[in-house]
Figure 1 (spheres, one colour):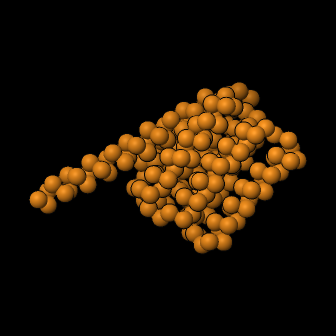
Figure 2 (cartoon, rainbow, N blue to C red; figure 1 turned 180 degrees about the horizontal axis):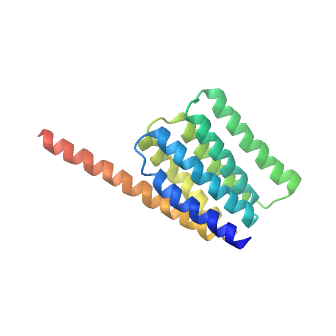
Figure 3 (tube, rainbow, N blue to C red; figure 1 turned 45 degrees about the vertical axis):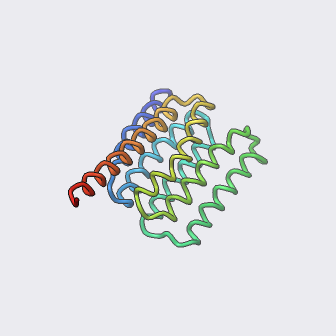
Length: 174
């Protein structure tokens, strides 16, 4: 069981590292969906139900958002997050840590469906990654923590590259 836990965590880390380097939003969504699926199973095996559910919803959401980004899709995924959160809190009785996972998921949901530019998504996801990092530390997921640190590194390095490229292009025009 521990081998599967680590394998899914490592696969999520590797695939997600590739995801944040995509230049089109739909390629990002596709690669990210696979990484979210791996990380979802990692958290389920760890016993962190909130992260497992929200990441699974995130994988489905990213696939759906490749083609559909209407408001009703946004509302559906927000509703699913709220329903699962309330179910975990009131029925299952999980700890208040679940609110961190669901808050992160809601930020990702809005960003994935509403935003259409890879650059905007990266900026928006800084908040969600921070919440994910807090949750990963709280539940003791080494791969969850590494996943979020890797995401921060990927986001900031890609943003730096884009800024540098823009500055070079501006200098050439002078």
